[in-house]
Amino acid sequence: MLKRLVPIQPVKHLPASIAFYRKLGFEVVERNEQWGWAMLRCGSCELMLDQSINQPADAARTAVVYLYPEDLPAFHRHALDNGLDVPPIEITFYGMAEFRIDDPDGNRLWIGHAD
View 1 (spheres, rainbow, N blue to C red):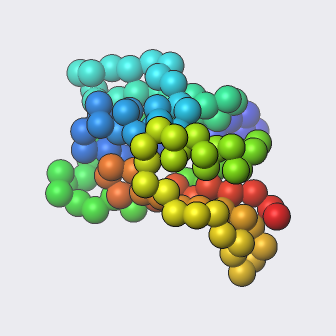
View 2 (tube, rainbow, N blue to C red; view 1 turned 90 degrees about the vertical axis):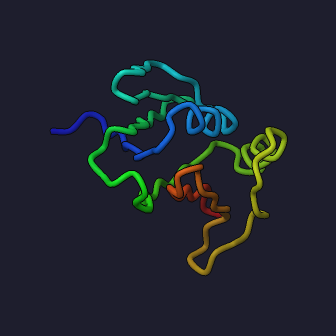
View 3 (cartoon, helix red, strand yellow; view 1 turned 45 degrees about the horizontal axis):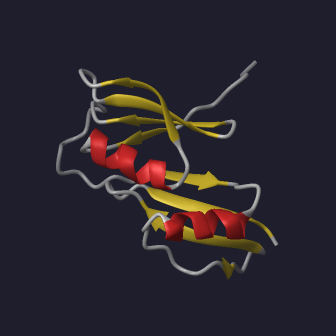
């Protein structure tokens, strides 16, 4: 039986990726420069960043993670206040209020909640 799931985002430059995710409210829990790896946490959610994942350095990143903040408008404001270029919150055809952004490596973040 599973007790936890932690997605891993492939990144090209660990410091730039950490700086981006910190602007969303993540904190670094653990970091290993030799591996090019870090564990981040925001609330009870964890996310790993890894530049050692076996991909060509110039490959497009394709990971997608859906984030469910407790307060979507506050999370959106926080991202804007921290200098991230985020689109307005929209209601999707499937009934979610959300916005989508890419991290520095092209990994897509969908951020929303049921409206």
